[in-house]
Length: 181
Image (tube, rainbow, N blue to C red; front, side, top):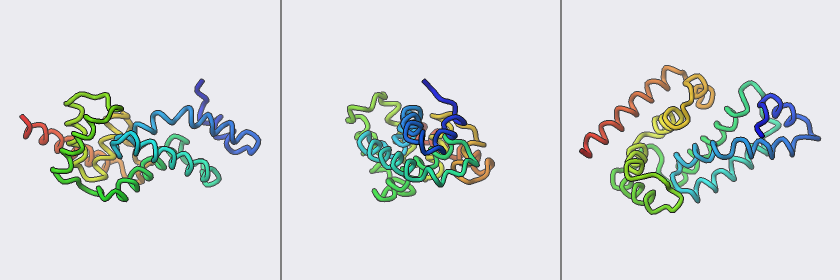
């Protein structure tokens, strides 16, 4: 059963219903957040680790949720920041080298939790070569079909900059596939 965001926020602000409301938040948002995290960190095990951090951070930061954005926006912001921090700690920050990206495709194909085909693995390889911001914008727009206005709130940047990043990312991915033909 899905609970309306406003109702969840109300329940989260009340200490007597906070724990139950947070359990609902976990049920309601975990899967979509997991896939957003997974597209950034790539590995199932790493995505699970990051998701634990996301939920811990969300729980411990409930008091700082100012309700000036949607709950889902706030959760996405935490998930993306935790994912990017993880990637930075893994020293794969702005751009993965071509040699590393081949390793990413091979790693994905060997991952028993990866249910994509070779084309999807190549797409992930192309996405991995994008700079961090373009990669994030591409994932949010392509996979989550997120509106630029929502992305703008999550990433704290203008819609115009996001549209430009997405356009450039699509162009780079198209070039990647053209080189493969």
